[in-house]
Image 1 (spheres, rainbow, N blue to C red):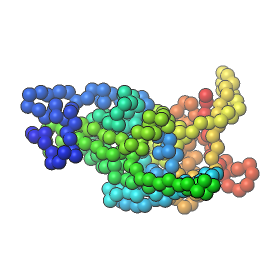
Image 2: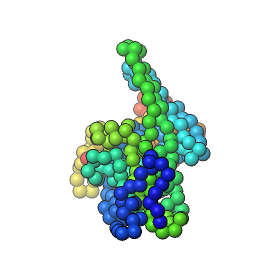
Image 3: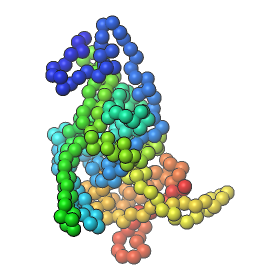
Image 4: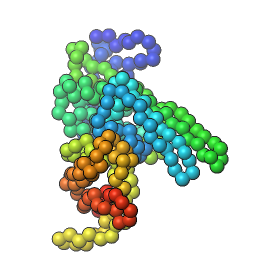
Length: 307
């Protein structure tokens, strides 16, 4: 088997060269095969509506970037490979977690496909290998373009970026061998955010247990926010302080979670079920309810979590 590829732009990773050299055979990365207890997600990735609950073949999505003093827009353009879904979100959580568990000095992460599947609780098969590689391809190919403008200072900024710059792989065996070693490269934008610790930890054991894409998406979303003091909760043995998170349930919130369901009543039911699944899976969470707003029409999601 030759370790040469056309073009200097695709340099074979060292661990792949070692596996394919005639004079030396080495074990795949053992560190990369250990399941991680925690993943990591960059906060903008967690809080923006970039992960679809109903991924499509190709699409363009426009999201507002509006604050008290700025006006802007984020445009997500997917490649023919398809839009980003909660599957890609989980892959992103695992990869960022692998980076955070390392030396944090390089944009590269070495990981095996089998180890990545183990971290996400996916049953291993040839299809799993293909699905993970397709997800990585979508994370590389999806383009984010942003523009922001401050009318007071008359200054603006714009740019385009990807979450991943590239991924490269190698293997020993048949042409369709599913167990492959990968080197993933984060983009400059992602590295700036990771190095600035603009991230939140995600418990992978909880993420694996959650039964629906909406529950997984909601969990990653909630874990990216700071909860506010919410009073006291009495248990069988003690009284403990808890924290609270409220969010108005409207079309904008459903879009943030990646839902295209236009029936808000049905979405609220799904959201209630997703919240209660999180309570069942993560002992820190005490309650999750969709309740009427105290002022104004409509409903809000209330999440109660222990300290």
